[in-house]
Image 1 (cartoon, rainbow, N blue to C red):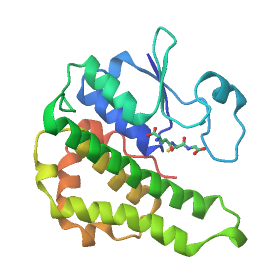
Image 2: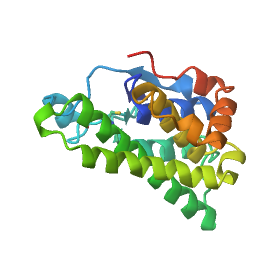
Image 3: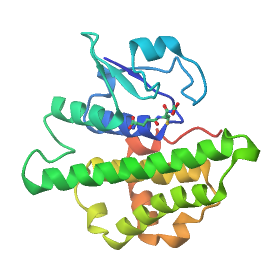
Amino acid sequence: MKLVYSPASPFARKIRIAAMELGLFDKIEFISPIKAIPVTENEEYARNISPLRKIPALILDSGQVIVDSYVIVEYLDELAGGKLIPASGSAKWQARTEHSIIQGMQDALLLCRYEKMLRPEQYRWPEWFDDQFKRAWDGLARYEAHPDVLNGPLDVIQIGIVCILGYLDFRFPDCGWRKTFPKLDAFHEKMMQRESVRTTVPPPA
Ligand SMILES: N[C@@H](CCC(=O)N[C@@H](CS)C(=O)NCC(=O)O)C(=O)O
């Protein structure tokens, strides 16, 4: 199978970490043929992979395409026998709820990035930026207040959180998350001991 990805994408990083942790990394060919950026044409990708023109996308050997990162992690986890996501009961729905929240936090930060990087200056809306950023920030505060989520066996939630923290370092290095969230800082340090996390840190811009 092939993963369409970019080294800078936090969503793709989640997949790369999960694939390594699940022992599936060597079964995936990693390809980064496109620049996934809003207001950039990519008709072929829209036609063949996804009309949303977002990465990551997983292309199975059969040609079947799986998007988005939420679904790809579920697919890989099932392939590996279910190690990162509980399969049943209330734990299953709790994990999916947390994963959805983490997706929303990462989406909000990506929108902030696009607002800063792409939107023409005269159209920028600082209150909107602050509101999106606050959604991610409040999400982090939620995990800072519930460190039990950070301390159990490795799961999709922990992987998602570490990708968000890495994204803040990458795109918003002055935001001061370590000072505000010391438990998340300790969690991040601990996660960086893992090869999967260390080797997928986004490259300097
Ligand atoms: N919900 C999607 C989000 C993926 C996403 O937004 N990826 C970004 C790159 S990090 C992208 O492809 N952006 C291109 C665009 O929005 O046009 C997922 O979890 O895979």
